Length: 222
Image 1 (cartoon, rainbow, N blue to C red):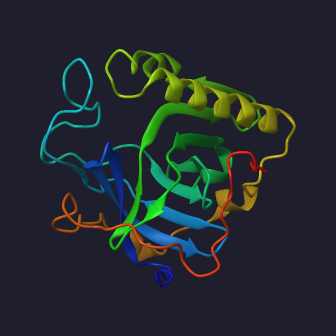
Image 2: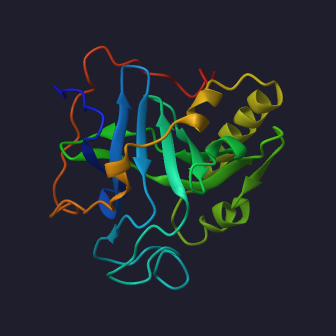
C-alpha cells in the first residue's frame, strides 16, 4: 500500500504508451491527499526519453532535442485528482502566476508507481485565459493521431467528448480548481533542477491507491 508523499519529495511523472515508458519528467511533491496530488517542476528540469520511436512523422516527440533535453517552458504547478482523465496546470514566469490563466491537460488518469506516477498525454488541451475565456489547443494533432496509430478513432472521440464537457463546466464557472494556487510559491531550494531516477524507463510497478484516496470519474468533473 502506498504511503503518502511529503512536500519536497521527488517523484517521476512518466508518459506510458501501450505499456512502454517513453518519456519522464522529474517533479517535486507539493501536496498529497486523498483528494489532490499537486506536483511542481521548475524550468531546467531534465526530460528523459526511452528507447524506441514515438508515432510522429519524424519518429521523435517535439520535446525530444537529444540526450540533454530539459524543460524550457515556465515553472509549472500540476493539480491531479484521482480518477480524472486530465490535470490542471498553472505556469509562472517568475512568481507572477496570479496573472496567468489555467491549462487543462487531458491525459490518462494517473496511476501511482514505486517511483512516482504514470499517465499518458492525450494531445488535446484547454487554455483558459485570465478573463475566463478558453480555447482548445492541439486539436489538429489529436485528430491526426489516428492516422499515426497513436490513438484509435474511438479513443479520439472519447477525448473530444471529455473536452466538450470540461468546456461546459468552464463556461458555467463551476470548475473545481482553486484560484489560490496561483499565489503558491515553491521553497527556495526547489529551484534546483531535478535529476531523473536511474532506470526510470525500467522500474515503477503500479501500486494500489493510497489509503482513503478518493476516486473521481470523468462524469464527476466538478
